Length: 263
Image 1 (cartoon, helix red, strand yellow):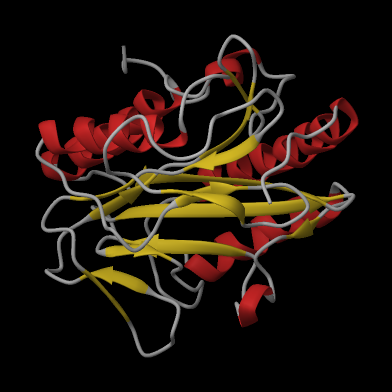
Image 2 (cartoon, rainbow, N blue to C red):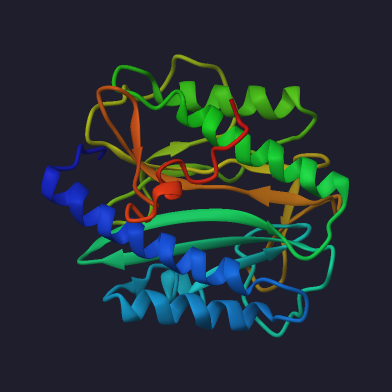
């Protein structure tokens, strides 16, 4: 069931989202050649727990870590381990935090040292796809308006989106209805209403859209080995549009986190 959240619930989700933002900030500051993905996981978990929340992903369906660390051709669900980041890598960091029973969820892709022009372009396409999709988040629009905007933008810029992985509703459950694909026709699906909370998350391949899951039953990689990028914010639908919940409202530049240059 898809439900609009009360003001009390939205405020709790703002707190969860702020914790996600602070964990993301701490992880981003630590990303450099020579760091292991396990070290990044420990940094995020400490921030989340120190702020009175718990990592949404740890133990979720058996997932063994607090964040997802997806390097290069890994699309999503990369498990933090002793993998050492190298100059030229890109890494997608997906973070979830549960605060007083409500979740925040966000992902961002980062360059490790000096990366290729191809990697930078992919990251830019995926990042701007997020904000292109968010432009369609407003009361009265249909869910698939978001999907269509993302897919059209990515395709027009030479990328592709996987069909098996989607954005989603979010609240007391990490994944709630509706599923929000990153492709498809506009004007379909549920009617967006004020107070609905959604995790919008374009996932973009530099190559073809096909994926495969590795033997650990979690790590999703591009089938052709091409680079992948992943961006996500948790938002609440408003009459005028949307409010991003996965930001630090005490930090002025976070008000439009990551939006620069996409319009």
